[in-house]
Length: 155
Image (tube, rainbow, N blue to C red; front, side):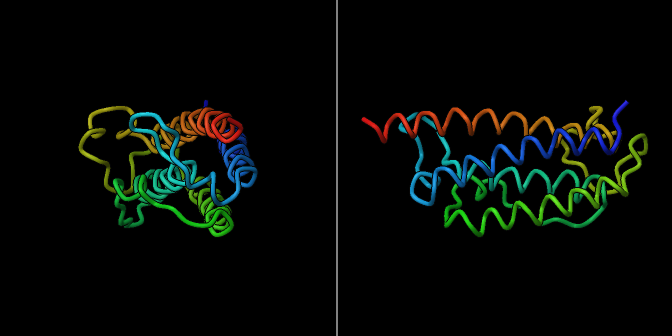
């Protein structure tokens, strides 16, 4: 059974890994897209993850109204330090949202139509698992993106 402590343990690991990668890359590489079709910059990947947290934990689970421009998440760029500050704030908000979650209860907020008939759209706990799913997936993507960028920078 999913519980608050376990969920936050895993999401913290993913967010810790992402922030370490961003800090290690610095502003220039964090805003560089690998030379691969459809690739995103590390900055954009983490920015997208903040949108995921806000939409799913904030809107679906906690019931807050969230304005999200998903497409713009992937084109965002900027200095790493303010993004790391945003991650820290999002992590604190996530902790508060998870503390108030009722894992077996229906969502408090609007669920995207695509997910309405799925387990993700029927229970707050499943919506939180989706948050972790996205963070874990994008943490792995970020690790690969970092490796490609560092290899390209060396050649």
